[in-house]
Every structure is written in C-alpha cells, then in structure tokens.
Length: 213
Ligand SMILES: C[S@@+](CC[C@H](N)C(=O)[O-])C[C@H]1O[C@@H](n2cnc3c(N)ncnc32)[C@H](O)[C@@H]1O
Image (tube, rainbow, N blue to C red):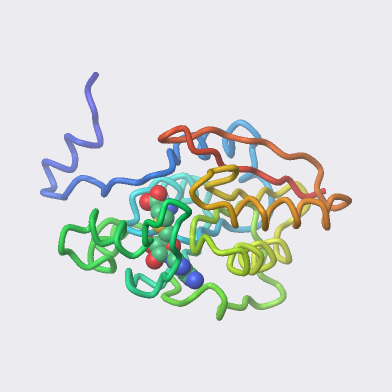
C-alpha cells in the first residue's frame, strides 16, 4: 500500500517518526469512534518518551483544533522504577535511544506540531490552572503506585463529563503497582466512573480507559 506520509517525509527530507510501544492507533480509534473530541477540552499525555505516540495524538488533536499537553522529564535517569522481572526502566529507555538524547528525539518528532504544549517536569510537580479542561488523557509515565495515583488526580480533576482517561500497563504483570493503584482508584471513584474499557495494544499489553460521568 502507498504510504503518503512516508512519501512526503522523503520529499521534505524528514526522519520517520520514532517508535512507540503502546499501539496509539487503538487509542485514536477509540477517541474517534466515541467522538470524544467533540467534547470541550484538550488532550494530555503523561510519558511521551521519544514522541512516537505523541505525534499520533497531536495529529488527531490538530484536526479538531485542540492542543495536546505533554508531560515528561525527558531524563532517562530520573525514572528509578524497577519491574517485577528486575528490569530498570532507565535501562530500557537508554537501550532504545541508542545513545541519542530523549529530548532531542522527541523535539525532532514533534517539531511540525504547533498544537503540542510540552511540560518538561516530573508529573508529581505539575499543577494546572483550575479552568484547564481535558477531553482525553493518556498515562504511561512512572509505573510506581504513588505516581499512578498522582497522574490520575492530575487529569481527573480537569476531565470534562464524558471525557476519558487511559492508563497503559493495566494488568501487566511486570508493573503490578499500576494495576494495584488503578483498582484502588476505580473502587474509590466508582460513582464518578460511567464505564471502563480495556484496550489491548502492542505486545498484548492493555490500557484501561475510564469514562467520567
Ligand atoms: C514507558 S515510557 C513511555 C512510552 C511511550 N508512551 C511510548 O509508547 O512511546 C515512560 C516515560 O515516562 C517518563 N516518566 C517517568 N517517570 C516520570 C515522571 N515522574 N514524570 C514525568 N515523566 C515520567 C519517562 O521519561 C518515559 O519517557
């Protein structure tokens, strides 16, 4: 099949988009099918890494005249999480970067998107103005329980009714604290959640999507 995007990239001398590890097209499909971007508010992503998924969300957001807020430290060494199988998050990040700077790779990938607002910060230090509204959020940042809880509240407080927040690595054995945090949050906020969806993505790893009442 002819890939128009690739042809244009070649003509313009642009590099192909970096890899992503979630299967963002499944999220894009869900957002589109549910017409989530007809709702008031922008999009937010926590944990962009090289920006391979960011550009997919940014493209969709741009079509709807929306911004995509992105939070990441862009510092592979700052993530101290160690998975159940004893893999250090920082080592995984370094391996795929192959010596490149995470920030440089991300910046290059997202350069064409003027609707991307990048916040270079630990998500635990980020606060939004009260009036900020989000229609969709995606979280794939730090996999520790306290981080997941932080990232949930950071978005949930600003999510409009009918809006969706999604978390990667749900029920993924290697990051059990993600599931532990989410099960607690889903129970605590069950009267505010209209529905939940599990979407299977790349490598058979799921994201859970929570729709706010
Ligand atoms: C698993 S990677 C994200 C992968 C990305 N979703 C993809 O598929 O390409 C996790 C990202 O979260 C970032 N991160 C980890 N802890 C963070 C924190 N406390 N605040 C902000 N970003 C964080 C890391 O720098 C890394 O880029």
